[in-house]
Amino acid sequence: MTSYNEWLKDYLMQGGAPTHVYDRPGAKGFVCIENNPHLVSLPLGKMCGAMSKSFVLSRQYDVEKYQGRFYGGHNSLYGWDSEGKAKVYGDIVPVYEDTVDRLIALDEEAPSKVRNVIFGVRKREAERAERWAAECESRRKQSDIARILIEEVLGNSELYIKDSSCVTSYNEWLKDYLMQCGTPTHVYDYSGAKGFVCIESNPHLVSLPLEDMCGALSNSFVLSRQYDVKQYRNRFYGGHNELYGWDSEGKARAYGGIVPLYEDTVDRLIALDEEAPIEVRYKILKFRQKEAKRQAEWDSKIEADHLQSEMNKRYISEVLHNPDLYKEQ
Image (cartoon, rainbow, N blue to C red):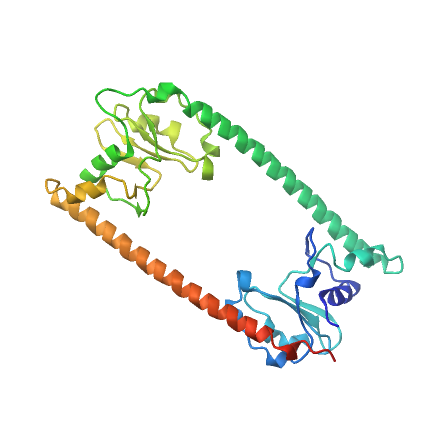
């Protein structure tokens, strides 16, 4: 009966070496074709990611002859050629907790060269996994330290002493930016205007680990107009942070390459304000219209791709559920 372990044993005994080691069972996760491989016609170009398969073709068939029916996309194929040599298509030969290599390594009658290769690969991969785990732990600790420092710095009440003449907000900045003929970059269909950290005072007190402020640790800052944002940009802008503020001449400036609009941003009010400059209103409306069209096209593409994916899944399932492929001889 065809199995990955049957193929793997021949492959190792013929001098092959595993490429990956997984600390879980996996030997039963292969699709083993016992018979009639000529009946298989798969959409190989679509078999990527979750739709990919790992096939083992019975040794009674020359795998070189049938590889075009199974190997493609992200599929892997294992089998034997006409001379009995174990062949692999896909550049990966995994071993698991339940693969035969463990038994071979402990078999004193097995060739020492083969046993040494198995021991060597498993030892190398175990050391690599240990190094990776240590690196991940180190990164986690560094991230925790950075998070605590960021919270301490931004928790300083001295940064939020409001001037009676104005209150800093993203909407305040965005209004000036749009009125100065600035162009937004993104539109989001949810509320987000309150998700900015607004620095009202004492920006000189801010000292952040900017290089660590990526992903979930990043922030979007708005600096009060009473401070020249050019002078203080290096205290806030870095990593994945964004910074919004005004320069000494009152020009609204953005650092980070993104000027988002949300459901609760002031652009909607400006667009409906008959006293606002017509060119500003038109620009906002055209931008939102363009982004709405782009989003609709994207949603349509995603839906079409999903339907095509479901059709491919059903077709692959139908092909591989043919009982004629699994009849033992």
